[in-house]
Image (cartoon, rainbow, N blue to C red; front, side, top):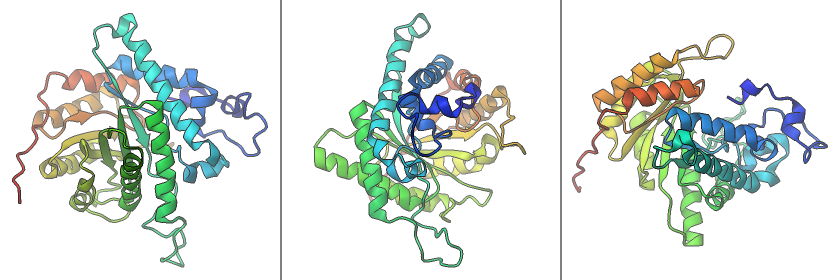
Length: 318
């Protein structure tokens, strides 16, 4: 959606960063400060399409990923700004004629997987090497969580998890933040990424192992997003729905990318896939990831809105 605006380096920089020493084009999170009008407009398009949960524009808003642009110092500010833009978009949408029949919508603070991984070595000749430590990852996530909470998000979403240890650092940071501040805890949503037909995460875990590794966080939901289209994700969502004692979420890509890295799956196709999952009782929360436009979200929302969500299983005490 940001790419549709065909922004230049100058658009990303704005007045404040016009003399920044590195290129910043592609740092989409920065737009929450330099072009909040664009980000708010995108949020409103998804709300109008029927989205009940919108994500903050903070997928890379922590010091480790922002180091690519030498913008580590902006991490906290970016999270606060992105959360406020999303909250403003909801308030304005609900006050508009288009949103007058909607009771509420929620902001999920997006916590992405980070550009460095704790479980894998970036050096093929040194499998024991790590580019980052657990403490560095946890500290970066702590700062991000503080910014998202201070900005007013309703949920915290640890998403696109390809390395469970990074996600554990995010959970640790969230729990430590609430331990330190004594604030009431926001619900946590967790969403992993199965990278191929093997049914494993990039760091090698099976779906069941991933689920077991995450459940100590007591999340509101656990699910899958990204990497796969709905057709390829279906067996994994079915498996997860049988494992999970909490709610199950799924937001696949609009199919698999073509040779140009673009997504060709039509909105009605995505809608039909997710309608089938809903009818089968696999899911509680559905949406879209890469390539899913407001048109995709509208089709998904229209297809599933009359279907009964997945029932939570009765879990016996061991």
